[in-house]
Amino acid sequence: MLRHVISPQDLTVKELEDLINLAKDMYSHPSNYSEKCKGKKIATLFYEPSTRTRLSFEAAMLNLGGSVLGFSSADSSSAAKGESVADTIRVISSYADIAAMRHPKEGAPQVAAMHSSIPVINAGDGGHNHPTQTLTDLFTISQLKGRLNNLTIGCCGDLKFGRTVHSLITAMSRYAGVRFVLISPDELRIPNYLRTEILDAKGIEYKEVNKLEEVLPTLDILYMTRVQRERFFNEEDYIRLKDSFILDKDKMSLASPDMLVMHPLPRVNEISVEVDEDPRAVYFKQAELGVYIRMALIYTLLKEAGKIEG
Image 1 (cartoon, rainbow, N blue to C red):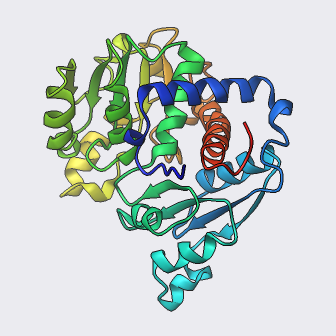
Image 2 (spheres, helix red, strand yellow):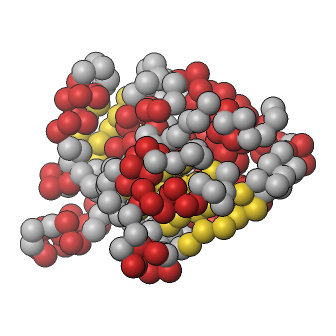
């Protein structure tokens, strides 16, 4: 059966659990999977720049014994000549066994999936979805906390435009006992649809605050994102608020000894480099674990498509 992953919601909680367990086994016993996708190819179709996502997909397929083809910008593809996403994926379907697509336009990977004869994985479409980042986040939490339920998660920074935060809130809202602390300037609070359709609709406990320091002691996980100057209507507001959302050593001293600090990366200045040596800072580990959850996803989709044996 041909299966695509365009949104984190495309996977049930049971399927997420199976993927995470598979990724854990791949992480612990990588040699057992080193030829599972031998002879298979992934096409990485990246219409906009990426470092971690593209390279982690490629590393994942190479770790499974497969090979990689693709492009890293629209300028180096026939999109520069005006070729449609639908036509591109039709052609790529005869070259590769599975595809990962990043595109600046929301919905482009969904269009690709509708015209594809190979599994398509959304590697990020505009401000819409980034399901494998969400899978990485869930895997990281599960691996380092040992659970996905009964957690207090602080999301800090740009909560209005940050697709990684939107996906994380949506995904984690499916687990029991999860509470959110939403830390942002008033200008960058979460969109109303998340508040009404996810948090309120599911009766999930949450609060919205403007200061990081006052809530740090209560958090199991702090998920940091960048507060961008361009999101503010005036420079005075940005200057007034920007330091409230920079994590440094002094703020870390207020946090629980077992709180995890996560970040989808790239980081700019929202986490001071002095925090990197703190054992609670796991954002680089998070990037490493992203390879294994992508391995699990590629392997699972190829197996479901009948392209490899289980």
